Length: 381
Image 1: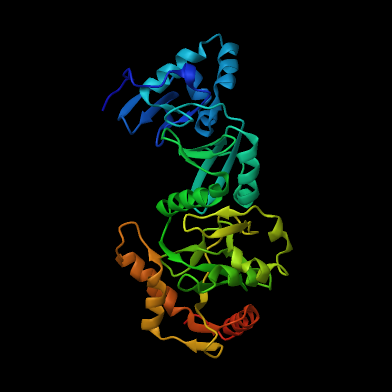
Image 2 (image 1 turned 135 degrees about the vertical axis):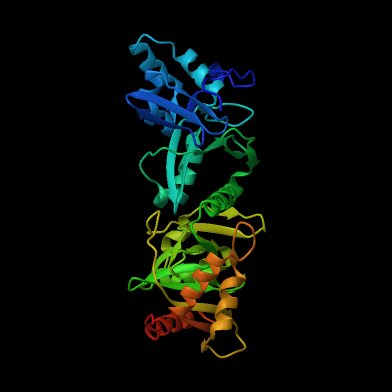
C-alpha cells in the first residue's frame, strides 16, 4: 500500500473540470486529530490537507470549482493546485463524461431503495423532464458515489455514468433509457432477491401481482392504486430473508393501450409526456406517492394474473409448488442462480401468504377479484 499520493499523468486537468466529487469508496477518518484519507482503488493512505479535510462533506456531495476557488481564496490557497493534487491521487474525480466536462446547471439527488445517486444536468429542459418523472424519489443532498451526467442538445439527450462515455438517444427515448439504467443500478445495490412483481399495500401488508408480459400487471396495479390500495411499485420488489418484501418505487409504466382504460382513474395521465421504449412500445410514467425507500411488508396475498376473454373470471388457489414456480418465473439474482438465502426468503414468503391464479377479462373484474383475494388471505402461521 502506498502512503503518499503519486502523480498520474493521465489525470484530467482541473482546468477542464467544473465540478468534482470524492472517488467511490474514498473515505476520511480522523485519528488523534490527524485526518487520514484512504483511496481503496489505488490502495493509497495519506494525511489529508486540512483544507480538503474541512470541505470533505461538501466534496463527497460534489462541489463546483467556483465554490472551491472562493473557499481557497478565503484561506489564501490555490484551489487549482489543491484539486490537481487530489485528482492525481485519485481522491477526487471530475463530474462529467469521458469526452467532455460540461458546466452543471442543476442537480437532483435520488434514492431508490438502497440506491443513492446524483443526477447532474447541463441544461434546464432535461432537468424539468426528469423531475416530472422522478420527483417522488428526490431527497435532500447527500454524499453519492454514483453520479450521472445528463447532457442536452436540441435534437438529442445523453446520459453518462461519471467518467464514462455519454450514451445519446432522442428526447422521446430518454424516459425508458434512464429508467433502465437506474433499475440496473438499483438491482446491483439490492438487499435480497429481486422479483418481477407489482407491490401494493393493504392494511400494512403486501399484495403482489405477478404474471407474464401482457397479463396487465402495470395497468391493474395503477388501477388498484386508485381504488383503495397503496401502489408502492409496479415492476420490481426485493424479497428479504424473512419473507417480507419492499418495492423499488420507480414511476409506474403505462402503455398506450391502457391510457383509455385508466383515464377515468388517472386524469393527469393525458398531460404526461409520451416516450418510446426500446421494444417500440409507447409509454407514459406516473409518479408514485410511495416513499423513496418503502418499508418491508409481510406478503399476505399473491395474484398470478391470467387475462383471458375465453375463460370465466375467478380465483383459483395455488399449492406450494405452483406458488414457488410463480415467484421464480420472474426472479432475478446477480449470478442467475438461486442461493440458499434466496430459497429461504422464498419459502418464508410462501409460508405466510396465500396464492391465487386470477383469471379476468375487464379491469373492473380484476379490481373486485383482488379485493376478494385480500379479504380471504390467511394469517401467518
